[in-house]
Image (cartoon, rainbow, N blue to C red; front, side):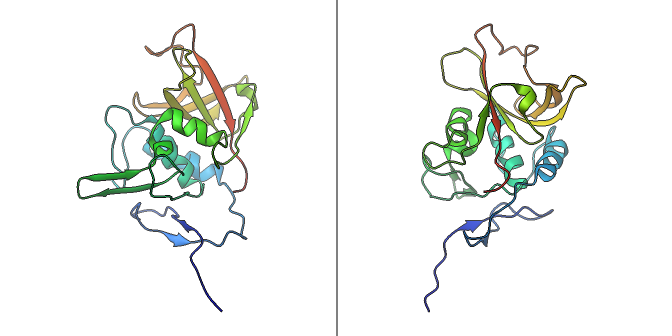
Length: 197
């Protein structure tokens, strides 16, 4: 019998480094743990986890990816920046992460399922989102998304509240109309994450 490694996946534990991985066989479905993703978002919304690099100027998508990963969303490690969804930290002077991990428009494309992403469901209303779902923001309406946030609660009318980095936010109203970046052209994409991967 021959054995081969089919997938490396990191499972976040307290005080565990982001570079620690274990193997998961593809026949075993992995449940997305929305409570763990939310707990991570609430723990790190106003600081950064020292197990990860900190992107001082633009940390929003990097933060959302960490939250998804804490909720057991599996890394798709390819070693190529433009493919997969992965993070390996820094080795020497080289930062090792995929564009989809840290760039808002790339995560938006990965969540949309192209190419070979997660096929998160795009819903037509923010009220159809659940805890640990993702909102992508295109502030100037040009089709390129500049911001990502993760759903961490709801107001009394069922509209989502989000946590985010760059301009650190906890349980902020989802539409960002109070942001300096918001314009009349702002467009949103509402991603309902899959329950299993």
